[in-house]
Length: 114
Length: 123
Image (cartoon, rainbow over all chains, first blue to last red; front, side, top):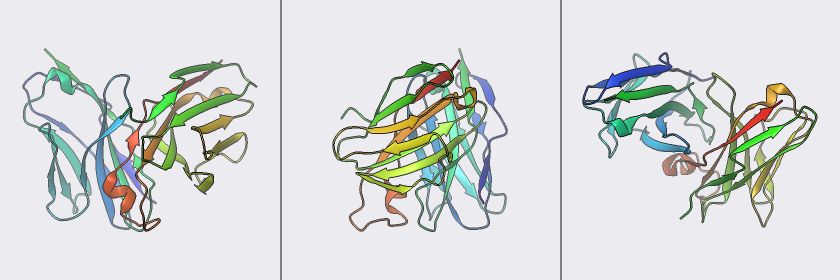
């Protein structure tokens, strides 16, 4: 079985500061990895994903995540956050062997302070 | 493109009543998924439906919960005789159909599009 751990339930950070949201997973088989973002009163939106190839993946709004197989991690980073990045961020995995089911973490609430 | 529409946004039910949650997928999407987020937990898969078919309901509680996705109209998640433990956020997602069927990467490559959820409170 797979599981996803997001240790930080809340992360406050000042505007223009860097941030890292941690995600660790456990799985006995290979997985795909995802970050979803949920802005207030909206649905979850796919932020970025790792399927194969380069272990560093980037989103269009400056976030990046690096797949580290040895540490079973997929941490999300941004070098300089904006107020508009305030949202809840969910890490998720899905196994490669033909499934549509995501296993989600409990989410990390990022609050960017002015 | 209106995205995935869920309604109501908030639903309050007394114990023993029925709750009906509706989900209209994105235009062009014919696969629908329901997830539940209990307080302080991550989203958990409940059921996967295509038009008029339940593909996988392995995440659905055995009793009181049912889901449908009729040929016309939205997908419905129905909870009968609600209890306090049913209080949660229920999210619906949809995805683009894959011409080759349940390809391992089809849904993954497209990703889901989620709705804003229905917050069910049982009092």
